[in-house]
Length: 600
Image 1: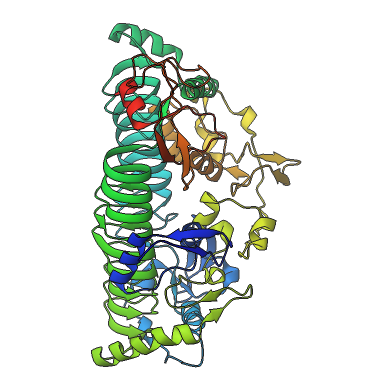
Image 2 (image 1 turned 135 degrees about the vertical axis):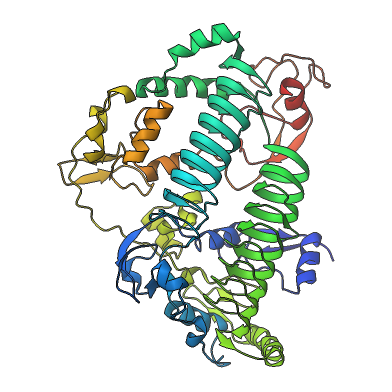
């Protein structure tokens, strides 16, 4: 079989299905996709909830709860205690399959009546304002975390302690403002760096201690803006960079970015990775078009935030943890042969299902636990199940679902775009592919208008003390205006960003203690805006074909002077590659060979 070019049903752009793709689809017995990789990714992302929380009441016990679902959605929502309790069973909502209606229509109707979990919190203590966490303690406003303690305003902290404002941090302690880094202790403003301690403002550093404002260092100590110092010199010079002052933070950030744009970066951030393409890949092999794949991802394609022994899978977002043979799956762990599903755990031979726990052989099911041989939440015998599944898959091609835009969904397609449980701006889709309301609606997505807030601002950010030492204890009683909002009066404001700005925020007591102990100035942005600013540190989830920018003695344009002779002498490097850094950006991009000879 040779490569084929298809036109995406959603964006109408051409995409290529390669021979290796056909081999995978044949192995798992599914038809080739009818949507391009980008649209498939967006569809998975809009089925992941961003940490947008609402006040509501449990539809079972009546207790006041914090919920991922806006009260206007009308989905039944249970608190965690009721949802995990034994007083209800999802099979009670089971329905008979109707061969006169499309599968997607019936499945969507089922999803709307089975009680939803207000926030997905398991085996965690004092983590009320969180979602998608396992075995966490004393955390506030974190999502997709595991075994983390005393963490605040973070996305996907794994084994993290006493840290704040971290995106995808692994094994970190006393860390602040972290993006895709691990093995950290007492670090601040740490980007794509590992095994570092007592460092601030570092990018792509490995095994460093007492470094400040550094790029591309390996196993170094006592460096400031890539200049080496003795221990005594460093201790004296670092006094000038007191991050307890907000003005000093902004000054350090400016100088750090100046060095960043003058220093070549590798076309892709990879570590201990073999035969891979994409970006931010570690300890993995045979991965193509994968982004943020780490710790044992093998033989995979189109992965975004997958890891922990994820193998032989395609189109997985936020999944893994000893999983194998996954296809078009999001937010799922410890699964095998699981397709077209979201938020499943320990699932085997499952298709078109969501929020299943310890289930096998289920099709079109929602919120089941410890079940097998179920279709649309109705129990069958093994023989009945196998016979009916074969008929349903054929019927899905004969009676497809057609949405309002004429897009056809058959067996092998993920959920229809307009069947997402959340609005576009409530989902991960908005984080990675931001749109304004008009753009989202034009593309056929749902949009949720935020409820007008009635905050009474007590202090503006420009009135905050510059240094953390000067912050009074009663700051925890203040309502602080976010720097991205323009308050026309004490109760009306205009938002200047598209970052889900909350317009105002408070400083929590434990949060203030962390700022004081780590000697960090108070932030000027609300947690949502800070989160979106960190997301901008990531490269896009897309690849471009480029050439190496090394011209021999220096980089193109002469901004960076090479420190050692390269194999291509004083001529332009001929190496080409696929990179997530497009030609319009300011970075100096080197191929693997030129980068390694300069920095490794």
